[in-house]
Length: 276
Ligand SMILES: NC(=O)c1ccc[n+]([C@@H]2O[C@H](COP(=O)([O-])OP(=O)(O)OC[C@H]3O[C@@H](n4cnc5c(N)ncnc54)[C@H](OP(=O)(O)O)[C@@H]3O)[C@@H](O)[C@H]2O)c1
Image (cartoon, rainbow, N blue to C red; front, side, top):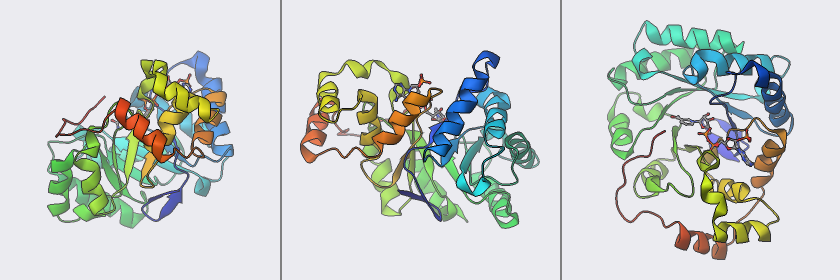
């Protein structure tokens, strides 16, 4: 389990970027999301940016008959909406599309030119009036997090969502240790590198064989090997979603972690934050 704010959550969630854009895939996508929720997943990650609301509308349809308390809904607002009155309008529109009266976590999608302190003040107001349970940030590097913590209310941040996968380990140099120093959890996006060609890697294939698993499952298990990272792979395929759920039960041995380390070494110096 991963603790986000006051909630202990299943460590694999569902990303939804590019979902809800195609009418021919709609039923399959709704079924996939429902299947994930019925099978143990709690977190759904979306953003006002995804299909300019299409992803949120799709999710709203998928969850309409599911008990709201059983779902942990994350959405994000554009940095150019980080100021009032745009921010409140964004939140209201996201709630409407999702068919709910609260978000569990509301994230600033990436850094904004609006002073963060001002945005935090609004977010804290929404926490108080119950429209969001918690707020956080996304694509914040170590210096950004340090700066945030100095601001009034900055320590109220519940998570930072950043790109993290076996082939993109830059955050391990400074961001992850920094967040761990104050128990700020990480949400790993693109955890399987968008299905990239890493699947051909022989070491990962061998480890996957030992676990009777796929390379994607090993990649996911690796992202959540420590208990303060939640991983949000995106899939519209029920079989893949079940595999992603099963990946949460895979424990990689010390020896396997070392083999991975040799193949995909942790960074030895500061790397710029990877962003998609
Ligand atoms: N905060 C940000 O700036 C930011 C940026 C990017 C992404 N995100 C979030 O993170 C989520 C995930 O990242 P992502 O969508 O970039 O990439 P990803 O999850 O790394 O990869 C998604 C791809 O992997 C495939 N896949 C998923 N599970 C699989 C499995 N078990 N076996 C084989 N293929 C599998 C999916 O296809 P199938 O449908 O065929 O399974 C899809 O093509 C996004 O959807 C979004 O919610 C956030």
